[in-house]
Length: 164
Length: 146
Image (cartoon, rainbow over all chains, first blue to last red; front, side, top):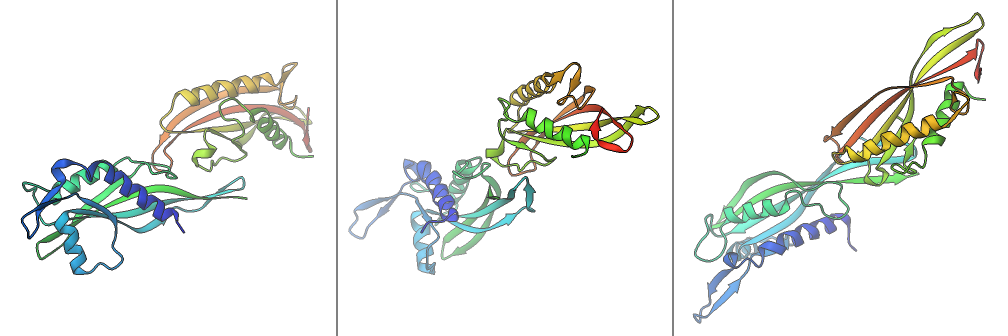
C-alpha cells in the first residue's frame, strides 16, 4: 500500500531522475575484466533496505542519489468554522554517493551531483504539497574506503486537514 | 432574537456569500483556514463597538465590520476584484437610505490594508477591509434596531 510519504519520495526521485540519470557527461564508463566497457548512469533510488557497507560502496562506484524521509514538523492546530488544519513540514534527506569528490574523465563527482540535485529540487512542488521544496542544508556524511557520501536536507510543506 | 450587531453580522454573511471572487469560501470568523481550496476566501467578523451619540432613551452605536480577503500568492488583482465586489454588494443592500435589511442607518468605508504573508505554509495575500456600521437601539432593548 502506498503512503503520502512514499508518494513524495517517488516524486522527488522522478524529478531528480528526469535530468540527472541521462546526462551523458555524468554517465560513468567502467571497464570490465575482459577489457570491454559498460556505461553506468547515476542511480536514483530509495534508501536501501539493508544498507551494508558493500551496498553503499557499490552506490558510490556508479554514482548515486538516494532519497529517504526523515520526519515531519507540525504547526499548531487551527480550527475555523468546522475545518481543522495543521501545516506539516516534511523533511527528506537526499544522499549523494560517489567515489570521487571532483568530476573525472567519465562519471560525476560528488560536488557536481550535489549542485545538480539542489538545483533540480529547489522550488519543485510535488503533487499534494502547498509550496515548493526548500533546501535546508547540505553536509558531509562520511567517507568509507574511498566512497564519499554527502547529504542534502530538503523540506516540503503540506497540510493535514479534517472537515467536520 | 439576537443582538442587533449579531443580526448585522448574519446579514453581512448572507450578502457577501456567493461573490464572483470568493464564492462560498466565506468564514464567519477573523481566521481563515489557510488551505489552498478555501482560497480565495472571505472572513467576516465584528470588531469594536462604541457609542456615537443618542437621545434620552436611545443610543446610536457604531460597530466595525471586519472583512479579510485571503488569496493564494502575492496578489493585487484578485484582492482588488474582491474589494470592488464587497463594496458593491454591501451598498446594494440599501432601502430608503438604510443598510443591512434596514438594521443600520449608515455604512461607512474605513480602511483597507493588503499584506503578503510568507510565514505560513501557503503563502498568501490578506486584504483586511474595515467598514463602520451605525445603528440605533432603544435603551434596554439591544435586539431591535430603530
